Each structure stands twice: as C-alpha cells, then as structure tokens.
Image (cartoon, rainbow, N blue to C red; front, top):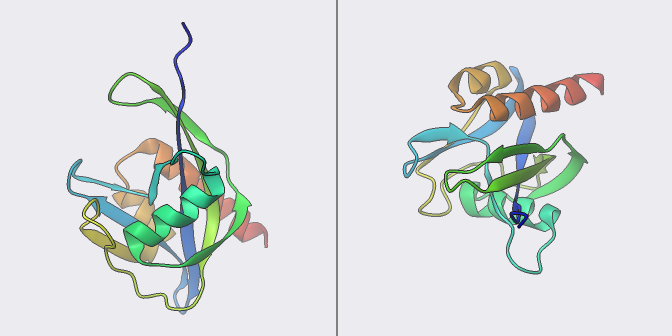
Amino acid sequence: MTKQWVRAAGGVVYRRAAKGLEVVVVHRPRYDDWSLPKGKVDPGEEEAETALREILEETSLSCRAGTELEPVEYTDQRGRPKRVRYWLMQPVGAVEVRPGDDEVDVVQWMSFAEASSLLTYDLDRRVLADALSRLEEV
C-alpha cells in the first residue's frame, strides 16, 4: 500500500530594507526550532492558499505570493512522506511581525545570512538559498 503524502505549504517572506534584503523566520516552542513559516494543507485548500493562510496565522502578515520555489520532500516524525511547497512572498501593507498563534512564540526579520545561520533544518536553508538566488536575478 502506498503511503499518502502529507501536503504542506509556506513562504519565504522578504522585504528590501535599508541594510539589504531581509526575511522572516519563526521560532516554534513545541519543537524548539527556527524555521520558515509553513503548515499543513486543509481539506479543499490549494497549496498557495495554505501558504498565505499560514503566513498570516504565524506572523500576522498579509502577503501576496510570487514565484514558486523548489519544493522539499522528507519523511516526517511519524514516518510519512511529506512535501512542502514554498513561494516568495511580500507583505501587503504593514510589515510589523508578531506571533499570530500558539504554534509560534517569536517572529523576526533578519538578513538572509543571519537566517541561514539560525534556521534549524538544512532543507529550510536550501529553500532560503533558492529564494535568495531568484531575488538576486531581479
């Protein structure tokens, strides 16, 4: 029997600040990790919708989705195959971040280099590098 994929989506939320490009990272106390905002797809929801919803829930930022990045695939803690799709995201309106739900206790803007050093997972660093390379092309 083939295992069903766990579907999730998120975003690399960025802005152009005086010191250069900055990105949003979140701390999740349940896992004590630093990651990019993301979450599981709800029934009937498309991944791009999930990404926008999760960004709003975890960071309090309303965003618009841009270019889709390379997805990541891995086995989750329950042994299920998981695929996470990511998009470049830019805030619409206010750029003040704050935890929007109980899954996240810290939300922070930082440089891509700082974020790469802080992120817990190599897969998140890979997504971040993909995002940065695409932004530098523009």
